[in-house]
Image 1 (cartoon, helix red, strand yellow):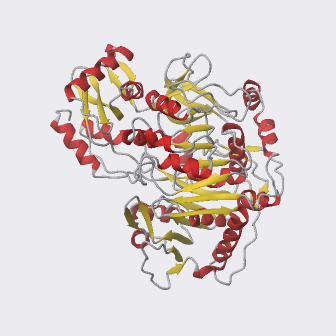
Image 2: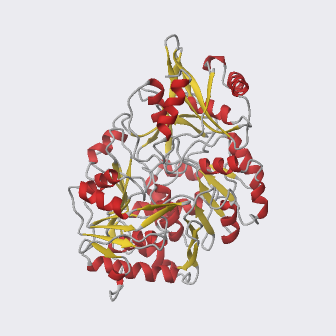
Image 3: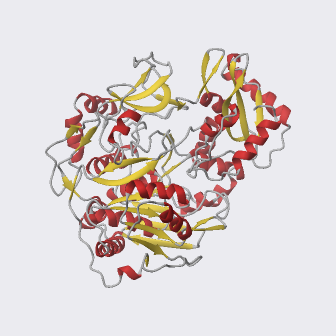
Length: 629
């Protein structure tokens, strides 16, 4: 398929283009209305079609003869458990668990909160909800009780599904006390908590609120699929809001199914029977789209991994998984590979494994620096594909279409070209398009394609305020960047990841690219600090690779020279602070907004998504000692 023709068709006649893609889905009742505009100005696709997402992921696959094929490879180095679960076995587990939920009063439209680690039962829970037409809301396991309580009050679930514990390398985290505290804090009280008891730690049960995961399934009848409308919600996934109140991103059933199958085939190039690994967690959008629903709807075998890239047991963990299951394509955040590289700079551990099954590696979630790209490409000998999307979109906005003939080549610094359906424009503050190569606000001309959220749970006006009002006629991504003469998109960071040095607006992402290219640097963050003369000046917070012993003054001089040569003297990059670690979310994103607040002396609160809040006072103290605050 030709990219140029397909992209043009998708913009000139989006209804016809996506109606054609919808033919790939096994609908119970095909949609008549392809797209309709909501009162807030967003768009809903295939609203009147009837389908069931669990049926597409399991029943239909078995009808196509894939019953004996592995659906999920469960690999848990932290608990020492491995399982290969076939489509037939997974359907049996899901239908039986759906039957148990049904006996507890869960039906179409009811909400169920899932607060679980990366165990197969979590996928079973998601699919069982979808089977009944219920709406699941997965909350990342380990979230603080008050954050879980906020989500309980917003979603108002009938049930909470949890496990006795999660495992973080050598640390066991008890989930049940967190759930109990969240319920105590919440105004809304779910009818029951279903608890999966794990061998490493058993939870204390309190009758009649708490029910055992396996006990509730005894003697129940398996549940059949409940037809739902294309516009009916499949799940709510909470993401951080600028006000601190989480936004419940709503994903519909119809557009979601069409978009995921389209992405799996055309963006990721996966065919039925291929082995796919999305190295993420079900608590994040990647886990929803490309660990559970997407791979199964596409008839693939998906790796379901409970572990870290390093120290499980070593930095060769990812290479071992690729060999064990014959992984054909993988999706991961760059930060994971930077952690691997930090522990094993030469990549020697990879030499112990057969990685010949791997054809492509996809990265997203944060900026892919050229140093990490080159290290991976040289180590693996396969295309390393940077691409870009958001929780709100649910599937990629820019990428090479690797499932097509002659996909656009990778271009360092770019997340590649817009995917058909995404009319990406770069706008200035007044909503006018900027010139080629000029930076601005990355926006998408409406309508957005299928699969993209078109509302926030119970707050449709908030959706319009957050994404549609600033630039009328466009979806505002909140990211800044530019497009080059060939249509490649370059994301330079959030629109607030820009500093003003003597009137020059400079992207910290560009400077990070240069700093991270130094051979001694494992990862970095560049932020702006206040300067009486120039307004702001950039400072590089740098983590060194394992075993590096470079003198601080020498490192600073070399980095200052690199930025001067590659960005320019106008950047005024003069300060480098070596730190032991950087604050990150549990999904691996560096918390640059918090770093900026620390740098300017603003008050801050540790966000609910932070992996380790103790890092923040470390950073603050280091910056104070260096005279940067």
